[in-house]
Length: 264
Image (cartoon, rainbow, N blue to C red; front, top):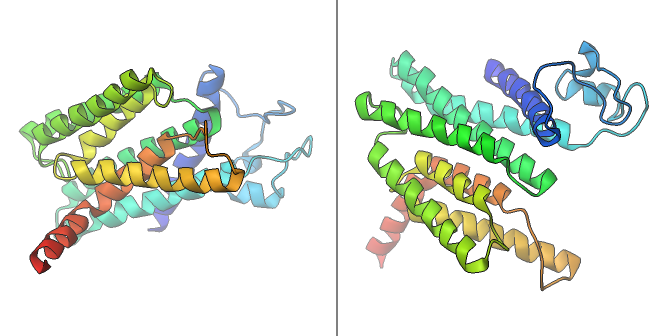
């Protein structure tokens, strides 16, 4: 688990870099630098979380405060990485080392892409469509492979494709009805991406979780700001949270629902 934690920290650092460079239209290659004074950062300033703590959340050169989002994203990524390997561990325990590796790659890719989209939308109130298309292509390729060679979690590729189409279609309808005032093309792609990994079995649960989480946070924000009309929220973080929860818990939720109906 230590390795998965360190891997997650490294991926979180990459996500931080990618979010800001994509927003600014910069290339991925090249040294990292302070957003304020633009001084190139040394190795000791790029250690995930630790560098933030050592320099007390400030640039070593200009002393300007560094956003708390940097260590938060790195720790969130580390947590998701540990979770990914934990979910895949039963395959290793059963002696299926190859399936363990594949399962870890699938879950880690899904979770880390969702973290990227959540952070990007939270910071910039939009989604990068090109990155969304890259994520979609990955999901499509994995499901196509699943048609030939059964992959962990992606056991029903046709159902996954159908779930992606239905979820994307629902949001497309919302965009048309609201003239894009509430959601945009990015949300359509993001819902499709989630559907490719959660599938038809979790379709209603996925949609319900996303809408419920978004509504709860919307109400909380409205109460805090005391603004009850024209309130805007970034919806992608809730799509990502709901997608992750559905991916992990949809079977347990379905069992609870079935048990409830049997009890009634």
